[in-house]
Image 1: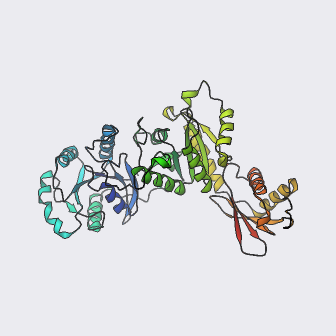
Image 2: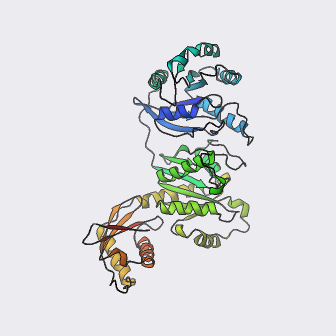
Image 3: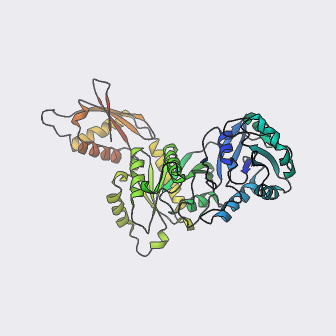
Length: 446
């Protein structure tokens, strides 16, 4: 049974994103005083007293978007309304009824649509007396709340649950894998997400920076549920200012990488690898994230694309991701998209694999037999006694040695590469820890 959808709708700057965050109990949408920050439908699965529903934040209706995306934003609002079992119509109790509020009210007057009027920014009880004029919108008495301060949250929860009493649902199926889609601006991430969702779930435009938030999109494949996280396109650090929308978007993108099990790093087939690509690659390497380098828009260079040459080029320009597989796709046509999903699922399985201690030690003996660590002057001969796996996601191996400082950087890289060759971790990062066999000190190999 599909989850009921509760959509949050209203004009710009009435606190819709704050309300989403307040009801969800965590920060999901970007909250910023600049009008028009939210453009896409940003959603979260919410559990209120064992009632599950999808809560959807929408852009401000009537916003004059400086990138000429007003029509796209309002299209997303209309889709959210059409799909919703309940709409939370948000107004600002301090401003009274505005012309835009009247336009939103007109949009919501349709048969079989339940609408709950929410008068936000009622930070103190003294503002509750201002609700009288909102009756003329035609949706009854509004619930006065302060999303920012949590005032009357429980009252709003009770009203929402009452409206959804005929839509009882079981706990939604847990997702198999979270997959973050990252890359520079205008590289085709949203087009890819929409293909997975089977609808225009996020706005696609030639305007760079269209997506600003991290948008979770649930989709099913072979009867299993996955989450694809569409992230804002990353810009050069010099282009971002502290507290700017781009700064918060980048912060959300890096947070999405951390909570994802697999990351798709999108690169435009027609463009050379840039500093943003390298920055993201370093971050993925530092976070030990399973990653697929996705070369998108291959249709634009099909007459001159040599996949092996491109792979060699990536090895040189993104050396920290030498283990990451490469996928060539055209998201706009859906070409190789399902193969990419299968590959992502394979990486997810690799990162969660547990290898027995005996297999690890057999691999270590083989590697040392091929090339033993070199003796270091005045320090002595390095020795690896044994190893074991102590974690997954990423696979984490702990090796006991006579002195961690004796294992130099070159040999550590050799050791990691050969362990990846021999063990079932060929396409995912391995975290390697060294510990003195008589002491508790652990040294991480980076």
